Length: 345
Image 1 (cartoon, rainbow, N blue to C red):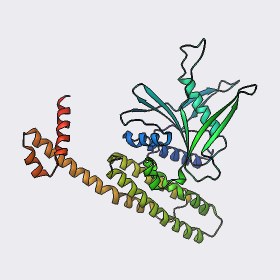
Image 2: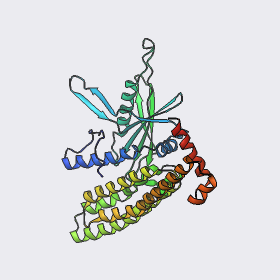
Image 3: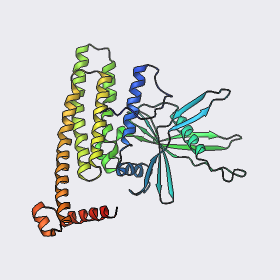
Image 4: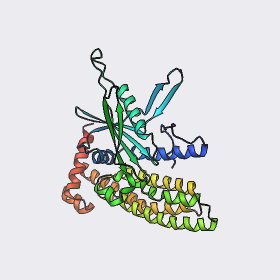
């Protein structure tokens, strides 16, 4: 399944080379796909974890327009900028605005870029109701998520701004260093949404092997070793996703989306750094070995649900239903509520 369509892309820092540009779009789409799942629980868990908030699962999530249009000085040319992601959470009277910036590499302008995106967003939503006295700007709360391993980056990047005659203001942007998180730590800190990105831990070494000037046979041998490490890493990731499903943290549709992301990331890495064997099929087979039994299990659950639903609708006793289907009192109560809800519509 191709997930590289229907996304906005940041074109400011892309290599003009068409192959490089296409690769950037693929990576950008993959990371945005994580936050496009319909189940709000993994997304809210992640936001609560990194921002220290306490958003409930009933809150409304919306993804704001990523495009910000600026007019260059002394020019009629319109330049479009794309922030990685704006998320608005509405819970009762409370509204939370978040700005997430995903980076696979570090660039020196990142803090300025995040501030600029956030400022333009605030201008777009500015409160001009008392414009003769003051204009209220609400900046989204920023976070940089660094995927690839980068040395020497602080936990917070500070943007120091001077507003004439020594008036100083510090704009702090927190940084999540993804490479420091293993599967266990992601689970414990409710960041399991980012499970599929574990493959990035091999990116640096794969790039080094691919770009080395050693003989092809040596490069092939080194890459084969990395393939084996990748298989172990992906298997452990799939186990973690399966556990998250078993624990009720993700739904079957989320499971499927995470699998798609893993397969696409794997294909991206193999195509980028050298395809020395048909590794895609091995990964696809591994994914199916975890996912297919869950689909079959879901099918059996659906079949049992339909039987209980029909027996309740026919007025059969709960004892008889439990005897013939093996469901619990809790299951029956849950299905009763569904029937009642359907009757109200």
